[in-house]
Length: 145
Image (cartoon, rainbow, N blue to C red; front, top):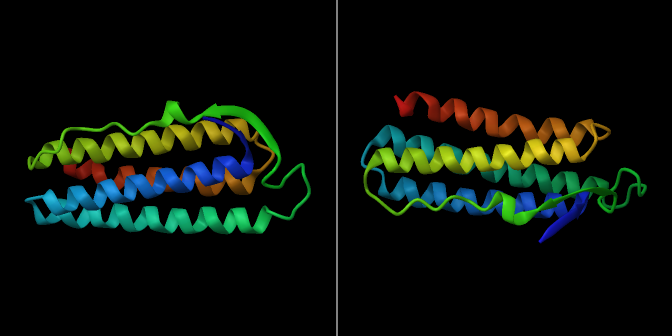
């Protein structure tokens, strides 16, 4: 599926965040370590916040002019490039951590590509979108050791 407008990108991002949030919650249910479980639940909550921010961005720009609104064209992105890695379910905490890291990397790659596609002319979109995955990685990094 081609993502060719700002609105389509925001909708795709919301759906991607929803899928990642669901994966984090499923992994939290499997986690044996209480610290890992708590971090995965925090990641899911952060994804929920990002999804809300995406909805606000969409709502704020739905009626703005065509050059900056949700119908503004962007360089085409393709949904298949951001398919979430699907690690086999495993009760091993290491596998759960890696799965979460892979999901956050996928989110970050999408947001980086979207930011570039927005041609830096829409700073408010770019700033909101790229900040959050970085925070998620900072939460996961200590658990990877």
